[in-house]
Length: 115
Image (cartoon, rainbow, N blue to C red; front, side, top):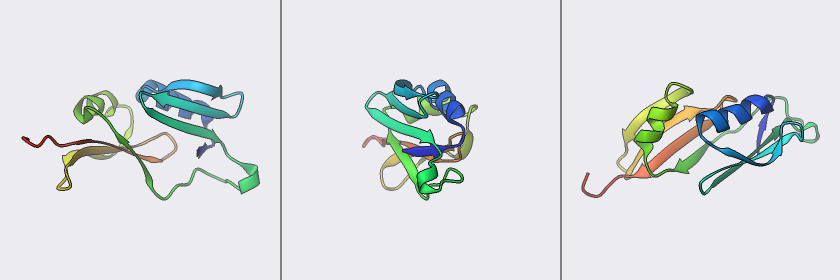
């Protein structure tokens, strides 16, 4: 569950930039359940019970996708970039962007053995 002070902006980013669909919840309900293919993600407004003051997360969300380069072409002009597509020695091709809240999202696919 990702916390956000901008639930409408979060819905717009994940829907319009990354192609997620709203599976349940909504802005009026204060939470979102989002889905794209096999990936699911939830977001909510800041939680007074837990003392949230701002979105905070010390890691990244990693999505394995079928075609990193096609996704990169679709999102690169619509998100703040952490790093552009790169082949890594551990066998993945990846890129990283930040969502509208500043959460780091990484997208990767295994490198082909014959590449």
